[in-house]
Amino acid sequence: MVVSLQNLMGFPFVQEAIEADRLTLHGLWQDIGSGALLAYNAETDAFEPLESPL
Image (tube, rainbow, N blue to C red):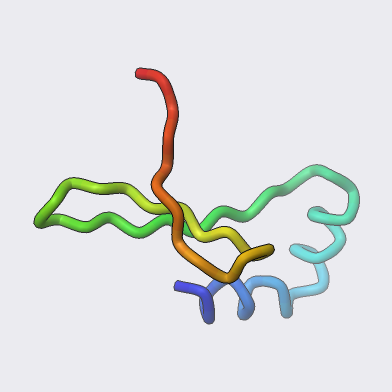
């Protein structure tokens, strides 16, 4: 998933949209066994629990 995000950043139109605040990329990982949803944090290079009120 991290490699996929890096690949997307290789497209000039994606990079331009991110720089213009028209696009934000997120990487998510679903642990089927536990039901946990983890979000990739590029600043820490780690997956963290996704916390959001339902």
